[in-house]
Amino acid sequence: MENPIKNKNILLGVTGSIAAYKAVELASQLTKAGSNVDVILTPAAEKLVSPLTFRSVTGKKVFTDADLWDTTSHIAHINLALPADIMLIAPATASTIAKLAHGQADNLLTLTALAIRCPLVVAPAMDTGMYSNAFTQENLEILEKHDITILGPDEGHLASGLSGKGRMLEARVLLGSLRFLLSRENPLAGKKVIVTAGGTQEPLDPVRVLTNHSSGKQGYALAQAALDAGADVTLISAPTSMTPPEGVKTISIQTAEEMHTAMLKEIKQTDAVIMAAAVADFRPTSKKAEKIKKEGKLSEIELEATIDILKELGEWKRSHKPDLVLIGFAAESEKLVENARKKLEQKNLNLIVANDISRNDAGFAVDTNAVTLLFKDGKRQDLPLQDKEAVAQKIIDILIQFMQS
Ligand code: CTP
Image (cartoon, rainbow, N blue to C red):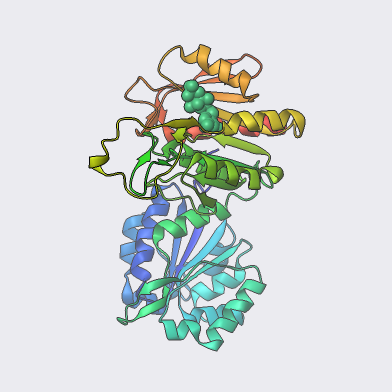
């Protein structure tokens, strides 16, 4: 499945808040992601950012109130409204929110918002006092009652110099939210998928851990690809520097044991599990309460085995839920196919993604991956070196086939 915002018609309404400058970044990011972005500015927005600024990033004509009264453009608001897949008003001022809540249409943007047949999304931006004002709150409630999605606002520094709730969400977050909203009817709609990611950390003392080089990149890419395919995704993540995709439910854990506990809580309502995490096989027998000191001359660390989460899931699948789809990863430095196939069988998996960790352009902590896919029925597919997002999309395409068969 490709990015759900690609080739979509997105109407971006911009109103008169200073956060209008962030909408330029959003229009730019959406255009780069392949969306077809039509921007409508209110007269107040035009005072803050020029139509030319938006035109420069979208490469398209930008619409203003001049188009309402222009004799050459025929019913601009209807022509903009009908082809739209989604309309986002970002930033949305208290005034525009009030107009939307009461069906007022006194400029091209609010007229178009009344005329659309697609979902409407609103990202408020205003001073904290205006946001918490009872009228604004009631207006927002009205919008929600009519299935209009409200995104934000965030807390933080405001243009007034004050700090509080009222900041428009960042462009990256708004783009991620549109991506999520536009994916909800894709083939995995209604399916629950768990993805695990990152390398677990097993504490030795309050400052030291045993861990591995997993960056979490492949797991996070899989979570995004599963969301793009329409699934409800739970990401059980060990510590990483990655930002979870918008729309995912993230459970942050540190150790293999915590990952196991989180998994048990979620598994019953789940249709598929993708174990991309590098789970520690061993952990220190006991975690020291105080920092181990140099003078102690530590010469040995006593280790014990952790639970094999995927193996346990494979057994549970056999006895309780035969249609649960299990996808595992195999990190191998030798005999890639032979060792991975053993794991596929021992853990009762539908598919195993075998990673040759002896290569330095694939596997741990790099942006690319070259994997061999081994299926339960004996089939094998070698994927060429490509970025982890592309690998994730291929794996999710296979998951869609499993779910449909
Ligand atoms: N796995 C797991 N629980 C563990 C260890 C691994 O669920 N305690 C999962 C991993 O997430 C992966 C698969 O099992 O999807 C295989 O992991 P890998 O580390 O390649 O193999 P191991 O089974 O740990 O065997 P070995 O380390 O001996 O190769």
